[in-house]
Image 1 (spheres, one colour):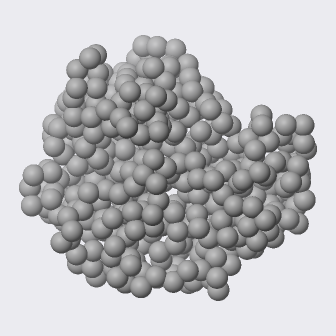
Image 2 (cartoon, rainbow, N blue to C red):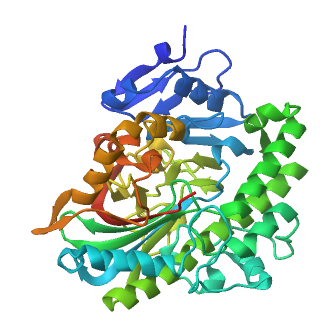
Length: 468
């Protein structure tokens, strides 16, 4: 019998794959009936991998945006006692999101497409996009010593308030050398403050109810993090006796030498990503002031590809474990010990959820039942199509997709705004709204199960993609 055939529905939007075969734990999936219908055997086999591969695994969860990944699904959470699951972190270590409000700006102030396009061009003059290492004319410069400090201390050298970050920095020993992996270090200084390619973006968004204007940044640790992840996939495979082609199955124990080495490098890459998002924020703030004469008010910054040792209270008991989130967002509720003496102690911290370049984004706050999802929520809306599939199957309607982006009209607080301004000549098919699940359907799962509530729902009016 297939894994898919053994999945059982146990709640309104809660399914479980019970322990079968060599699985060590059940897999709990938070998905609606409609989202379950678009899963297949491959996704559930990867879910079973997550429950089978890693020694000391304590729990596995699937988020409502889950889809195929490397060995384990994207949109999954693996909790262990002492194992770091590399496949459950992925190649873009600490990929995440930063959200800021544009001070005093309302939907009525961004109706003019030309004004939004000017904003896009001013950002492009300050923030590099794409997969290379070019630097635009107005981008800030950093020397290697400054980048070393960012790898060691994250956003602390940038004087960022810790309450504005999920983690202002990740623990790295002062004597750690961020330069030790040459392939990674060669990318570090040239790419700091850059967006990257793929699904990374900078987006102007408007709250559908209030008309407030926000800007969201989605990016990660760039080539520095990718090279570190790639190195340890191979080294981890060697340590576990796996063939290189099976390297994404590798894992390391926290207390073994390779585990200690990976932990330091992983956290340094995480610090790089945190700092990278805040440097980009500074460039956006300058561009926004240039075009609209106002600044930004930071809201929050958070990762969704990370392994960290966390407190996991449940049923009045305090537990701890390594929480490996691949395409999943941390969601600590009010009263969580790690939020004591922070501004989020009484509310829980925000969870920033990008959707698609058509369907926008959301800000969630953890709900009363968030413990049953491993203190985690989704990280987006989730793919319906892989990149190659989207480019192939959507090419016939490319003109229609472009027209939709150009002419779509949305109303914000009584103000009609037409179109989504792009930095690309055409809409990237693999990033178009048609390649993704419906964000509102994904968010409804979390509200149905009491895992989270939607605080802000924003729609895009300008989008900057990292073109490849």
